[in-house]
Each structure stands twice: as C-alpha cells, then as structure tokens.
Image 1 (cartoon, one colour):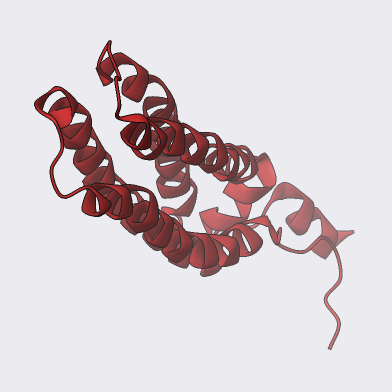
Image 2: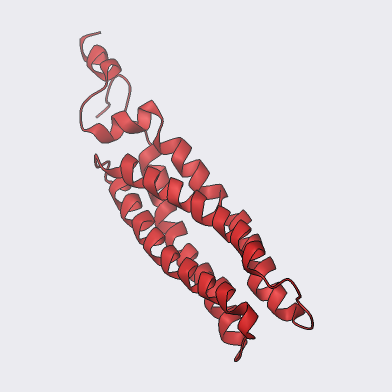
Length: 168
C-alpha cells in the first residue's frame, strides 16, 4: 500500500532515537567526569570545596536534565504533542549547563593552585572539555525540533500540504 502526497516528517523520530541513545551516554559521562574525579581525591583542600560542591550540583542537574532528555526522546519517537517543547527545554537547559561547566570552574578555582595540578586537571580542565563536548547535541536537537515540519509532525493534525495532497 502506497501513500500519496507528503508524509509526516521523520525529524522528530530521528531526534527521539538519538535522544534515547545520548541520554544514557550523558548520564554515564556525568558519572565519569564528576563522580570519578571527586572520588579519586580522598581529601580535598578547603579552598577547593566550592568547586567540589559545584561539581555535585552539576551532577544532580545532569541527572534531571538527562531524565528530561529521555522523556522528550520517547515522546518524539511517538510524535507526541509535548515532544518539541520538552526537547526545546532540554536544549536550552543543556546549553546553559554546558556553558556553566565551562565558566564556573574558572570562577571557583583557587587563585593559587600550588602543588594541586591534579585537582586542576580533574576539577577544572576535565569539566571544560566535557562542557564543550556536551553543548553540541543540545544545539542540534533544539534546532531540529523547532522546525515547522517537526512541530507539524508532532501536532497530530495534518499539514496543509497533506490535506492538499488528498484533493490534488
């Protein structure tokens, strides 16, 4: 059986499938880049405690963010009306968290690093690298899920082109 006329956009389904893959990967790398470095250092000098607290805040925020990401991905695969909104919310919050991962460690790191270069590598440089890598997908997801065809595909109503295809 062949359908005539324009079909529903596949963008939400593709973004949703990628979200189902990337959300667990995001949780895993949050564990690797936050819990790993903090756990590797049994005692942290007091001047580093603000940065360690920030790392735990970003970890909790990441878990919530990737839960939102997973939910948006599931809804996008099913073309549900809320999918563009949830994926947009994920995109905006993901960009903000990634920017925070880059900027905040510089603001919180001690002025005198001294002999703590390993803390600098684990708590600052690793966070910046993860933030740079983590910002790419939220931008792409935000852009794709906010196209007219994605919103139409998730609206549950046929587009004007689909209606015209029936009568044309």
